[in-house]
Image (cartoon, rainbow, N blue to C red; front, side, top):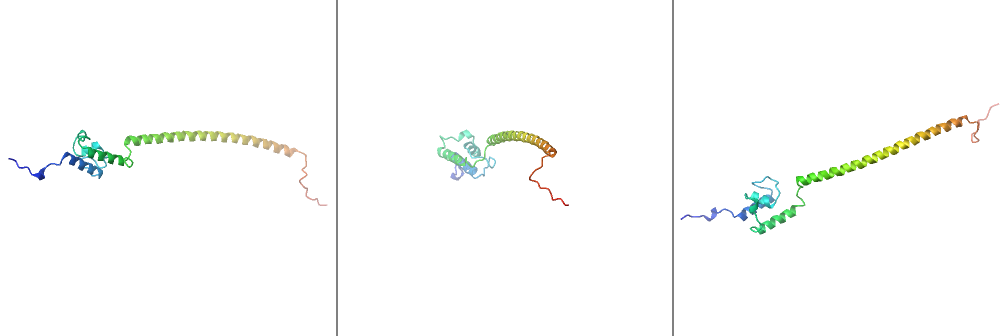
Length: 151
């Protein structure tokens, strides 16, 4: 007859999963890299079992705790690589749209400035012509007074 020591028993699957869950929550995993997100599959992997072994029908309270923890961490969890890429694309797209809008505004303003320069040149030409005509005129302005002449 074999003697079985009570202290030599292996921890139950539930205990292994719970320990793995606690290690992942405290960011002290043994089998997975640090920083691994807490998910049901990662808890099973950290426990050293296949993810399909951690079933809701066998471990309902633990699964509920894992799901509650995951949902509470959604706000502070970093975006996935895909989500970050999509966010960058949207930002780039909006920046490209803004750049196109600003370029259009620049072109419109450059066109208005060019038109204003042409009007200024035309008006300057007209002013020069009027000044030339005025200097040839024999009309004496009454507003001007002559200096007194000495005898």
